Image (cartoon, rainbow, N blue to C red):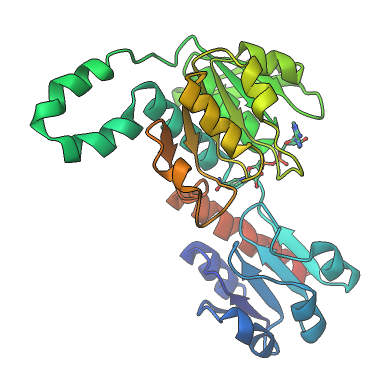
Length: 316
Ligand code: NAD
């Protein structure tokens, strides 16, 4: 029998599919320092972002034939080393794209109607400030007709574009690899519509967008820093649901304080799980604790995709 340790959990659908295919699946989390000992009894391990499968684990577990990552980023796995040792490494890159894209709009709708601030102030300031806050938040804007700049036009960037286009926004996209094609919008009744989109220069996105959202992998240097914030449209909103490190956080705080940037929505931070206090307490920043993929639907898709990849690997 093939045994799989789902060390960071797996959606019940994924577990059921594996069990129906004859696999034994254990979902009890083994602490990192006990992992090597536990893995002697398993043929495969699945992880999310918590468990690390590094060289030490790979070297000490000769039975291991597969490492599965439920999700996208494989920063917690020594992928190349595992593959050199003949261990298959698989992930589920597309399963969470729409969930991350929808979180972008949770932050955008929050920012344009000041929810990040009203949710903090209304419970503590009480009735006395109701009318004052009503005035403070009187200058909201609609998303329809505005331009969303998308930096990084891969799976999540394109899913974000489809939501934006569906809302009647304009899209300006930039990617290291130019894209020219169509984004397909699907509507009820089986209707669909192809909207042509072509990537443009980064500078064009930075200068001409009403809102900018980042969807690139981790980079050695921030993509948005002081020089870029100097060039943005005054009053732009910034969203980051990609990876900490892609925005210079201090430059963002400065741009928010000066009013150049109207608001930011952040799901990812330089110092996770302890973001800067100046970020956590900033009245113009909407916060989520790295939950881009954390929807029931995404977790089901991840579980299903992971199970089918594991079954395909061991049955080939
Ligand atoms: P993807 O590989 O499909 O797309 C990334 C795109 O970024 C690629 O098209 C690539 O060419 C482009 N790119 C790379 N460096 C760039 C740069 N410097 N400038 C412009 N474009 C650049 O990846 P994806 O699935 O769309 O994921 C995007 C990001 O979202 C990743 O960082 C991933 O880790 C992150 N993510 C976050 C969550 C969350 O919970 N917040 C969940 C899933 C993924």
